[in-house]
Image (cartoon, rainbow, N blue to C red):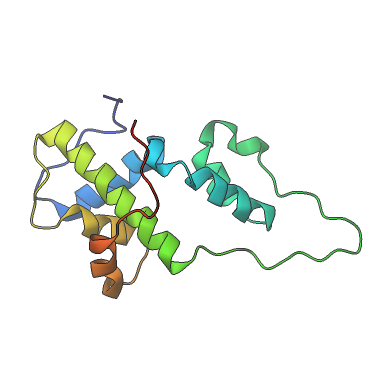
Length: 144
């Protein structure tokens, strides 16, 4: 079990839980099912927005910059994550949230569930809440 940023909040305090989860998910590295996230972050950095890559690698964030542009070349429009990518990332964070809850509280069910917190953390419109709940990974899953 990784050390926590702060002590876990009261199980029933939604506001404190949101802030704690935000800090915990920021510090903990993604696990193997999140293997595509570095590639997504690199692609966004190539278009001139290195922030996702800096967040992914905070220990070397001060050394991560946008690539230099050739003389006469224009910057392309920064890549934004597609709706489907955001839904996939939120669904996977919901699984990470449940794992955190299991580690610290010994339970995963609460009145405000993990999917709701993941949707809030990714700033996804609430009408996509059902899409996040129903999301399943595509392709073959590797046994690990």
